[in-house]
Image 1: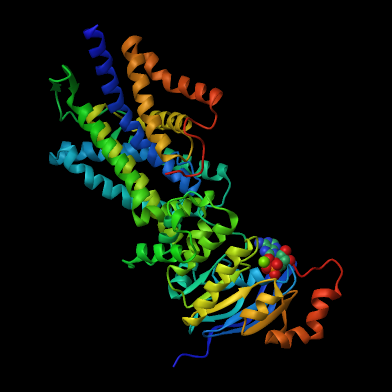
Image 2: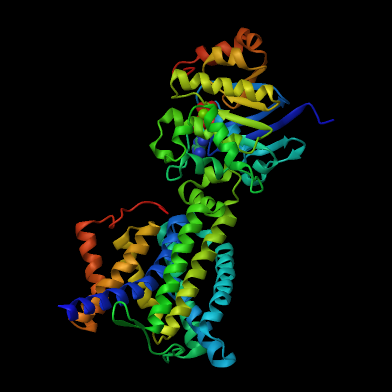
Length: 294
Length: 242
Ligand SMILES: Nc1ncnc2c1ncn2[C@@H]1O[C@H](COP(=O)(O)OP(=O)(O)O)[C@@H](O)[C@H]1O
Ligand SMILES: [Mg+2]
């Protein structure tokens, strides 16, 4: 009995930690959707960009990913701002198909750029080894997983707090709800959109750095994660920030349990199973489908 | 000394496809005064506000606000120069609380925004709704919150587009008191309103718009006597004054 409950606890904890990474990635995707109405199909490639930056820094200048993390976030923030200013801003008010096509094109472009620069080989950044022993619970959590999960969760909650309480966060919510009202409140809507895309890109970049210490990755890994993000968004509710956070954690949990009790192949498929289930039972997502709820 | 008009509009035009919504409007709003803008439905009143506030940047002509040429500027720039406006149909931010609705409209450097918001809410007896979401308010309360939102930056000129429409008599009285008080503090206002007794009571000067043109200008009693105004309101079939 004791043995069983400790296994359950082990699975739950590692599932939540893995889910936190999904949450970090999905919340950024959801933020862009909530504010701009654009589904950014290149979000996965932004993550992979973060992962390769982490790998480059580790390989060539021997920098630890956790040191590189803030730099990567800054870089991707800047890249996101420029992308929004030059590309995505032109898509606001256009139909969804146009924005899907454009971000799909961007995704293909970035992925091929990655293949060109780094080939299709898998890389990893093996900096953290072993595990933490939690004596009070009598279980061991792998170090990379614990560190990546904790940072993901902290970042996601930090962004959530920023959106909820910071002045700029309120401005972002105002723009997502009613851009015209935001304008007349004196908010520079174009700037706010740039900032939003920048934040989302920085979150993707951070997810990439954390991914690099957890798993091996190639330029083609972005697509897989994007698909899982979609599952998370549908599960939690499109445009719903908290929904994406909970959806991500839930997906991590379910994958861990399915992987633990059945096998890893099943765990890989379970995201889509969950997606179909939610679509059948609660098409609006678990927390409801609303436009930009933060 | 600043010029006597806070807002000066010259030859303002706006077409929607074939429809001429504004056909060359000239208009001045004097500093510290309440200027009424009346006219039948569809005469172009809201379109004029859209152009002045920068929400509609397709209009042509000239607009000077407090000495600045503002036609073509982004709304956020115009607001920063000291203009505020409300919308005809209330536009409270539904997912933000009442307090957040006000704070989001404050000046970035305003360290007393929160106090100011609380004071404003107290003035209109909404202090108990501070943390209520915008969408949970009654329509009348929403219009009031929208008005307070404008006041967060203490604008020099406020454009009010039918602020009392759909508001119950009690809240309406609060609203007009607030307008009066603002004027006493030196704020200039421009008011679109269908109730003629309100116009008569509040406005120092009135412009009458009909089919995109100014057909009369003066005090309320002057424009009321104008035969063209009478014709605009009652002379056509299928047109009403409300
Ligand atoms: N966005 C728009 N697209 C097309 N026509 C419009 C638009 N806005 C206003 N109009 C037209 O312009 C005219 C003036 O409208 P409006 O300014 O709303 O009148 P008012 O506020 O005086 O009732 C009307 O004929 C209206 O149909
Ligand atoms: Mg109107």
